[in-house]
Length: 81
Image (cartoon, rainbow, N blue to C red):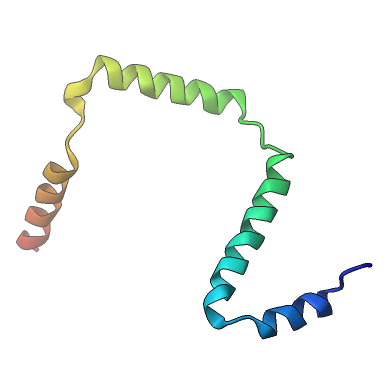
């Protein structure tokens, strides 16, 4: 038996509203699962850029600030405006 979109629509109309989110999440999962089979290949230039950034981060940890320090800095800038 072939299932049509109309069959699915009729089934959806009989579900309690609370289940619609779960059904939608399951549809997203199925789409992701299908697309995963056609995985996107990351270009070599992008991999190299990530390698350079990781090396820089390891060799220069002092160049990074914590999120809270950045928040303080931004709040300070905003308060001067």
